[in-house]
Length: 407
Image (cartoon, one colour):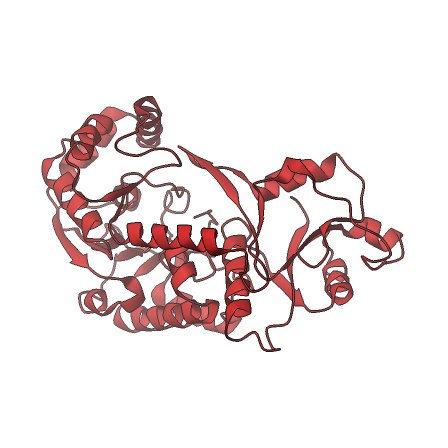
């Protein structure tokens, strides 16, 4: 939705630093960050919040109470439709000042609000959302009193994540298609999570030679094992056929695919379509197979490491020209949203970028920050300096990228 700003109705300074209300706030913000990357306003007074949004030039404001979350629908190609797209469709068909439920979730047309004399929600009752938005908006309650089933589902996801494997990437490659002008080719060392084939795309677009090396790191031993076997055994052709063999082994890994898909219940035409899309990025099957033959000759290392506690990785990182690191969205996942408060994620992330900048100031960085903001186009030292200059507030955006992508 163009011109949309998101807001939180509440005050984290009044008793919400700990306990269920604080966790409710954290979850609201974390779920916003899957699809919304701008600043998030916060105020316990709705009128003040809307005035700030209006004076900043925004057209609409989505105001949520702590514990209210927006959801998304996914498919084989990742996110197929976000709650924001559904809200946009809904809003374009209707005239309103306020829509939704006071105190929990309101969509406000700021132009109509000003035209009506900036009324309170008591004076101008909101238009109900209705069934069209069912499944897009979920209210866990101010103190998560209605969140038991949802939180249980998150715990299940967290358990699976520790043995999780991504066989393909659902984040785009747009951030790595063109290397920064200042990088020294070829890649000396690529440090990367063991997820999908994006590591190979980084090598191809940034250039590599026989002296290049790759260091995979991941908190999932299953992900590292999958990558070891892929590197050793796969020919670089017909990935779906290779996956069929892997899936038949029932090795205890959890393969992150798309809702409804599993090794036991796989829509193979959909997987073949994804593989065809992957090959298109490379210029066809022959181009990818040629890359894979070259890649298999490189020195590779596989490190069990949770980047949130990065000692094993920091110990191996070299300060060298031509080095690249990709950590994807490791600091902003369902796992981190469930296990850590917003400020804890911020602290862990800031510790990581400080240590990385000290260990390898010249490594070029790719990934997202603790608030899911894109990070790319800078060295670790330059990024760290700019990050702390702007500040790490999880409610604020940080434009520290050449190309923004959605993780």
